[in-house]
Length: 280
Image 1 (cartoon, rainbow, N blue to C red):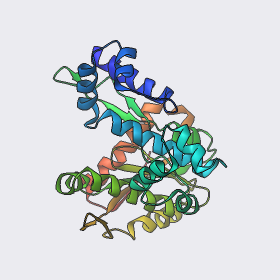
Image 2 (image 1 turned 60 degrees about the vertical axis):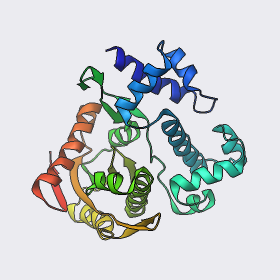
Image 3 (image 1 turned 30 degrees about the vertical axis):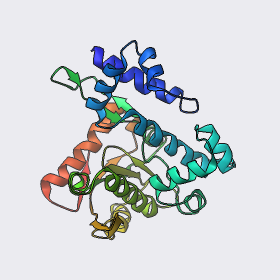
Image 4 (image 1 turned 180 degrees about the vertical axis):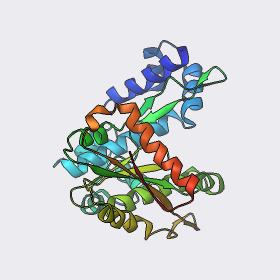
């Protein structure tokens, strides 16, 4: 339980201070633990460094500002603690693959690295390991749906091999590419979300199965296309599970929604189909 509290408090501290200077020493002090304990717990829970997580959360939030506000690049850079617009531009391009101006013209969704949600049900060897990602916006959108609607859930095929064979840089590039494919496939009234480590979703707002399949096919149609990272051509593909929700989904709890989406993704692996429809 102590490790859970440290992890949960760390996540909360980071979110509250994304627009302020953050040091690991300050986080440790706020969590009433040593720096070494903080780093150990964080690494076990996320397999990443604190600095990396903070940077990705800031760049995710900055993308939202680029899409939804009239702030200048300088204002956004300073807001998220970058010393200069040039430093921010380099960091933004490394994560998103494009400059902010191109991003604003070609993207609609911004949640590439959502906030982590600690899951206290999962422990391993006395170390808290459980985490999910924040799907609050997806949940809210479903709450507002007054008719049956399909949610498309996408899973990257063999993503673990990308990280293992080509490194974390390639893994991040693969996630950004798949998120872009999902974002491009989403219709004008649809929203794309990241719902897990290598899992994404579209709230289609559609009740017609054929129209939903056409949306899914826009993503599947790009299966096998490659990205190039450090001279390596890395082909990427996804599986898709479709889950009918919407009308009456206000009766589904947040955790249950997460589990249902994960369940339909797991089913796509079990049945070996590229698209799997699940009516619940």
